[in-house]
Image 1: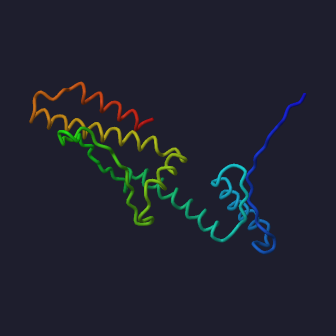
Image 2 (image 1 turned 120 degrees about the vertical axis):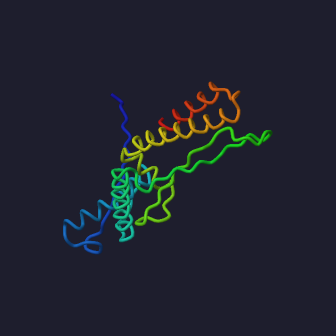
Image 3 (image 1 turned 90 degrees about the horizontal axis):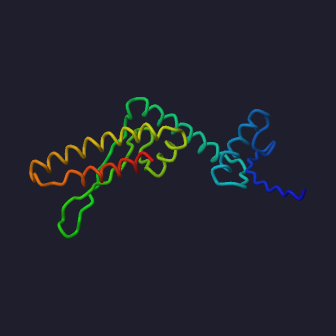
Length: 171
């Protein structure tokens, strides 16, 4: 029975009485530190500071604001299309969809910050479905425009590329 067990733990520490005197405040502050330790990765220790508490509370406010915006028909979310150009012909062959979020309460927040939160909280799937529908409509519009200007535009190639891009978005 030589079974070896390896454990890694993360912990948050709040010092009594320096950082809190009341048990409930001590527990809350230790929780803030613990959440910081978890975000830093496995096997981490974080000691409570006021900055940790403020960052944690700001993170919660950000989650709540994202939820509110998603519930309100994706308020503030915008898609920007970045063309991908084939160098020889200088023709746009594809376009990349870039998600942005404009919000007065959280100005200047980039996708590197809000997309992981959307994924962690389960809100990203509904957003991906909306994005896929918008891309499908845009692609159909572009295809119809190109068919009007060039009736020989290959239908299957265009829609196959679109299907692959939409699958990559939803996955």
